[in-house]
Image 1 (cartoon, helix red, strand yellow):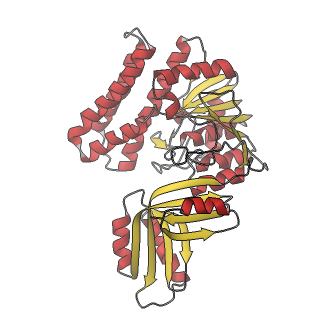
Image 2 (cartoon, one colour):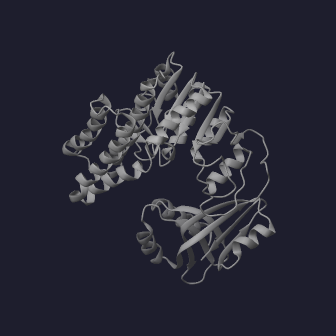
Image 3 (tube, helix red, strand yellow):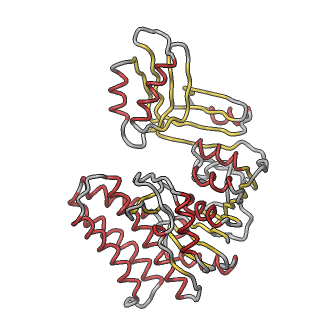
Length: 416
């Protein structure tokens, strides 16, 4: 069994859906599980619906109409007959959201988020599945919520591996080609859960682990894993191969090509991962596997913007000891701060963080009652794997460096 995953960029419009058909013609679809994400930026659009429901109810119908019109335009390009059942089917999903809002009693933002944002994945796979069936590609459509079981930690659910493997094998059955959703799952009460942003890659890895897949291929709008984001750097290099360890390191530091959680189940069963272009699917792309050295060995750049550099010291200029650091980390955890760099001296403790949940202000208030706190915001963090002197000079040129940290293989530089 092979697992293919197509992200939102690959199905952002009708041509993207048609391209999936072309990819399957070129690569075949026997013994295949196809995982498809929400179309284009629809996850963001459905997030806006949830935000309107809680905070801007006057915008709610407008937000729902926006996603309806987006999908309607794709349907018109794919299915000429507007009496085709797919039109009613997609509309019923959107009616279902309105019905959910009318009956919902929960004030838990994360619960509501998962029930609503998940619909984007269901709509996407229904459209792609129907188009493929219309073009003679026989398969079964799977509701992934009947396959992957999790706890009830909404927006970041943890997988019940034993139960999920049983259900995946049961639902795949004798099918040689199945299409399902990424990112979503369900808990023991059959409420929809999600696996965290960009979790569709993780879904592909879960299926691969449970069916002992031969390989996983993730199709992107780039040719594979590059040594830098082409939106940030003029010249990039395709990495022909990297190890699981290297990929995990890059993901930890913020590389966006491979979701961090994706690699762990694949590594456990030594299932190779291919990252390929959906424009040129027959190209080799990048292979991620066990015990293979990075090739070519070249500096790899990871850029994280909107960083905050937070320096904390004792008000009496005493040493910052282990107990202080432990307390500070408790607060960072409590306020859900992502820590990307740590630096410690005798009288101060410095961290580079990102405020993904808009909690920095209350964190700053509580820290300021106990410590002297200085901070800079709107910073950029550059991480360079396999750095060279030339690579460091290039990054530092024309910038004010606030923190620079070097280890054997990794350099991190915080700049204004």
